[in-house]
Length: 223
Ligand SMILES: Nc1ncnc2c1ncn2[C@@H]1O[C@H](COP(=O)(O)OP(=O)(O)OP(=O)(O)O)[C@@H](O)[C@H]1O
Image: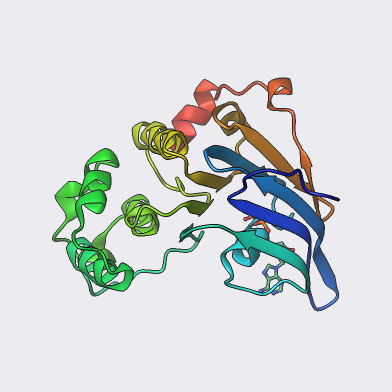
């Protein structure tokens, strides 16, 4: 497939990835422009996390090309945190790793995602949802150009889930490329473009065809 001309933040061309004989990605191609909020959906096991790991460079594709313009923020599904450190210690650690002058952006995110009260709490005693908020903050605090977020709101309460989408929309409005892995049908209405992974390839998905509103039962399940 020939990608469309023009500016892009992320260009994926004919990416293949197998685990031994299990062919998970069998020719994934798409292009994401700067300033786009894009969803990757698909059933469990369809290869969404594998695709994000390939896009982030965490694992190598067997074939195909990934071109990325600008800095990367990757929020993996499994949190990579140090139990012995507090939230603040994580922020200082990542400030150094990212070579930032301050933690201003992280401080904003602590407020926006409602977990500033845990600044001095060690990760080992944080709830799963709060760990995930820290995981997401660490992926966003250097204001990267391309964001790869693998179900970043896992364990969030409903208010914080909504807040996450506000944060993602503002990043998109500031020209960032935001890619969100989701298996929740009701997220589709919040996304500019949705790619569905099935049988190893990505195809555009018509969000209009879905009822993008969560049911009351679904909202309760998120609490
Ligand atoms: N390191 C690995 N070694 C072998 N098989 C793997 C590995 N990682 C993933 N798989 C397999 O590859 C397939 C795709 O997995 P992946 O985690 O990418 O799917 P997913 O769409 O993200 O699933 P989910 O919605 O459950 O998170 C699955 O069948 C999984 O068992």
